[in-house]
Image (cartoon, rainbow, N blue to C red):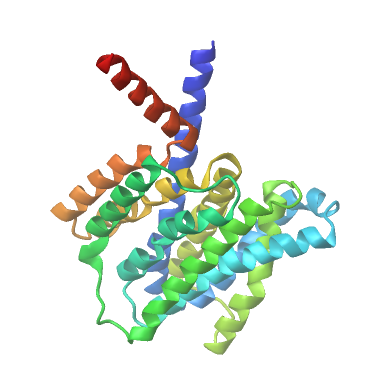
Length: 313
């Protein structure tokens, strides 16, 4: 029975992490599609307005019980994790950075989280996890390097995805170090989404557009971003953050560039190179090591030393 429960737990954990990766990748695919239909700021504005409208009936009961400091906590998470991440990436694409290049820079997120994890008690990266981190990072860079185009925009524009990475990493560590009051996921996500609506309303207004165009393609892109990238991406991300260590989440996020690349190949007929396949292989090799529990790593190391000692004896 215990073995069955363990296997079921492993399958559930793997499915949850995979769902997070696929949903996270859907955002890059969605914004690539939306960029051909109109302003990415305008699409983001209506993405979050629609998401808030859908979430409200499910969040209503929880909203009646939250305190002001809980609203502030979730609002800050929304501003940094959603507005601070999506805003700069959308701006970089709008200013000429290729979506593939923005994806490569933005997917330095797992590395940033792991390096900053030392500031959170109990989340320090240790032992074999560093080797796993190196393999995952190498695999991600090898797989995604072919899509980088540094000449598409002014040099300072490439700093925007870096700001996005730092913003989401800060939100991740903030949530891990100070989780705040427990509340239904729908309530938390509703508050976060509402916090960023004014941000994108201002950005869209600065571009001269607030009203959505009546094109089917634009509506399809917005619906895609709402369902897969907002509810799926951020929903699974916060759920995983409650269940797993920072290292395990980061290990899964390293799969985002390869998954995005394969998805773009299937949907947009983007080229799939040999280097991409090699990079995916390196990432898969590093995942078990980076996701390894530090306690398990120390146990494995001690077991190895004991066996060596027995052989010598």
